[in-house]
Amino acid sequence: MIGQAERISQLSLYFTENMNYPEIPIIGITSGKGGTGKSMFILNLAKALFENNLRVLVIDMDLNFSNLHILLNIFPDSSIKDYFQNNTSLEKIVQKEEFADIIFGESGSRNKITETALDLFFRNLSKIEFKPNSVFCEK
Image (cartoon, rainbow, N blue to C red; front, side, top):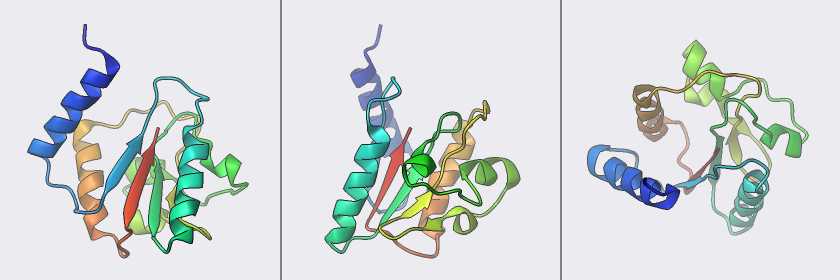
């Protein structure tokens, strides 16, 4: 049986060798358990980087129990679900906030993202209108 850390290492190596993603740093924050503080960590990190004059795009990849919008007390007009299900462009789902640009997740969706759709999503990051210094993905 493969441990979680070993599997993440294998996937990272696979994506490094087989994918041609944009050359901006992409940092994923993940946990197999909810309520571990991923969202709070991401928001605090994004704010700290903003205070050091870095531009950040935060992407909430959660399609079921997203909560970034709750922590920020924001009712987003669109979410990542619009990109994957409604073919909405990335530019239209990015919401500009004071300290970061954010693509909000969705709550209550049970849809899965295919590997092909996810690959296209990360390839399209290189085509977005602005170029952040870092991208943080949380799920």
